[in-house]
Image (cartoon, rainbow, N blue to C red):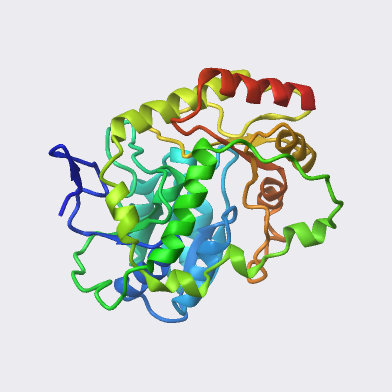
Amino acid sequence: MPLRLHRKALPFPFDSPQTHLTRNGRFAIREGLRALGLPQGAKVLLPAWHCGSETDAVLAAGMQVGLYRLHQDLSADLDDIRRQLDGGSIAAIYAIHYFGFPQPVEEMQALAKQYGTAVIEDAALALFSRTAADIPLGCQGDMSVFSLVKTLPLPDGGALWLRHPQPQALERLSAAPLRPALAGLKGVLRRSFGKPRPALPAVPVPQRQLEAWHPRAGIAPADMRGRISPLSRLLLRMPEATDITSAHRANFLVLQQGVPLRSGMRPLMPNLPAGACPAFFPLFTPDADRVHAALQAEGIQSVRFWRQFHPSVDLSGHPEAQQLKRSVLRLPVHPGLRLQELQRICEALHRTV
């Protein structure tokens, strides 16, 4: 049933009866793969640059991971995908809509139809995003996943959409307990209204340790409880999608125009397409660790984005993905930011270079 506040329904994926609300996006991936009935041991083709939690979910579903290349603009290399499909044993093509920038899903669908594979859309960073033709991202493949907490102020929440209805797909799962949800809400309130914590003195950490995959980065036992918490379901009735999209886009554009373009620093995605609702602003900088530390010291919430290397994924043949893991920062664009705060982020970035 569509979620409503004052008789107004949230848009896709919430307005679809084929959408299941889950505890998080990682769990949605695993359960979606199981619901699709893909053969055990077959490969899911992931883009070489991905978080790693997708790999955990694929492995947990009893499948293997393959990698395909990306172009410089982070769009999928369809020729590389076709070459791997020619080799057989591929069950699904996995597309990540980075920061609301759409992947060529129609072309992927054509390949999938030719080779008998499924197409999975990952819109974890692209909730409420649409194509230039006003098509919601996540509604063109056989399955799509969303991470609600990356765009909305919720303590937990993901979503799984399946093209072919699966009424019993998540029936066996229990709701998440209240305690973790309250802990998550405390974090949301602290990030939204609390004062920045004073920066701790920098402690040198070996690069190998910083890039090592750790259990907290993947699927934890608590994730397996499955359903979204009642608290998040209640809070989910409050946002207005149009306002959120407008704020994310406006804040993204302020950062895009204000970041320095020197010493290798630049917006990772320079041209915001019509319809995109980016969860964050991705900043490329060759000196990511130092810039991140400098921003943290000024009380600015930056995140070293997808820095960990999953032990089950061999990126030795994908130097471009290795570089991205070592060079991307995630900056906030949420609606709570004021113009002067965005300008302060840009000024701090200028001081780092």
